[in-house]
Amino acid sequence: MRIADVKEDIDHELVSREQIDSKIQEMAARVSDDYRDKNPLVIAVLKGAVNTLVAFTEALSIPVQIDFMSLSSYGSGTKSSGTVTVRQDLSADVRGRHILIVEDIIDSGRTLAWLVAELKRRGAASVEVFALLNKPSRREVDVDVKYPGYEIPDEFVVGFGLDYDEHYRNLESIAVLKPSVYQGEQA
Ligand SMILES: Nc1nc2c(ncn2[C@@H]2O[C@H](COP(=O)(O)O)[C@@H](O)[C@H]2O)c(=O)[nH]1
Ligand SMILES: [Mg+2]
Image (cartoon, rainbow, N blue to C red):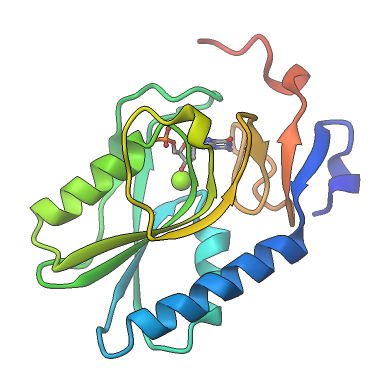
């Protein structure tokens, strides 16, 4: 789906598909070098990171395993509740594994900080992060992102896996949603 298909809901495009693909290729090349001979386990946070995971793992030149975790701190709104809930856990045992987390976006940092700590608690040998988008002005908790994507302003974005209330995930690029779409939502 393209911006033109939902143009009444979109304020403007923020990251084009070409920019997304180019950043993912750049990070995949770095990761392929860094993880050669490490047999990493790539963990994607559902559902928003799915598009990034697929493009990223296809661009790698090393074999990896893939697993998923479904975490929620947002419910159906645009503001984090601050509490991370596990909706679906990993199927893999992370003990002794080199883990690379793939995330769509870092906002407060609470989701990632929780996940990194949890994977270390479970005995991972190492835990690093690739996040396609980052809103540094919103940070509440420090997170170390070894493979950063694009820094974006404090705006609510959708597309390339990111949703508002389960809509817009199949938009091909990343765009700012018009506030009129979500104004009036429950706090
Ligand atoms: N569709 C959007 N989802 C967003 C946006 N900013 C954050 N998020 C979701 O929250 C988590 C991370 O939040 P955090 O506060 O714990 O860092 C992220 O994975 C998304 O699911 C946004 O602008 N649009
Ligand atoms: Mg996410």
